[in-house]
Length: 299
Image (cartoon, rainbow, N blue to C red; front, top):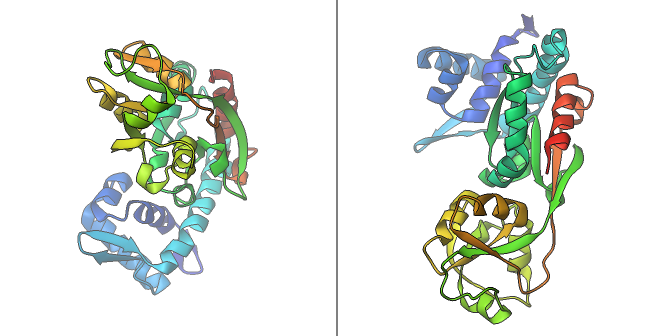
């Protein structure tokens, strides 16, 4: 189908190309050869009279025009998929919908693990694709066509629909045989002992890390910086380091890892997680069903 001399099928390829910024990866997702995908990019460049993707070193970067078009293209295709194509199958049991969700490994373990087990039983053809919140800022991630983002409530974006999912508090974790600790952690020990943090240098999406960076009252000696909670847990094992972690996640991991949970020797802010989605999905039956299931299966 063509509109204003544009083959609308090319918009699907354009969305993938702008997401992947890589011909080989785009070809794989589109089930096309690399030469065919390169040909599509050439046709898109001719139509828009713009390079769209420019090779710089070993990576491709999108042009300003492409960056401006990325969100509108994703929104248009999302509307077609969710409001027109998927309209014929709005029951979870029959749907083969793929949901793209942005969430941290904390959310995966605490909120989504039970949900995925449930969906496998009741809607076996529904599939999921996950991307970490630590992969970039939420604004840029949201523009990549995510169906849902679950992240700290303070980072929800204007113009999107959102709903709170759960609250949690922070605790301190350490190896169960940490010789520097004896049943509790004092403020002095907290300041003197080595720490593992998440995204410390780039003010991560984890609210406690930003609070710790900005705090004038609490000091700590950062020895290791990681990009996710799973790495953080394993990094304190067999060491004398400690780390701050959400309590629910710490309790899950303490069941199978040699770690011990301690109260933090000062008051910290809570962790509040919310889910966020584009308003165009507010009344989408399957998306609404998924949001309801998340709330039902949260701890």
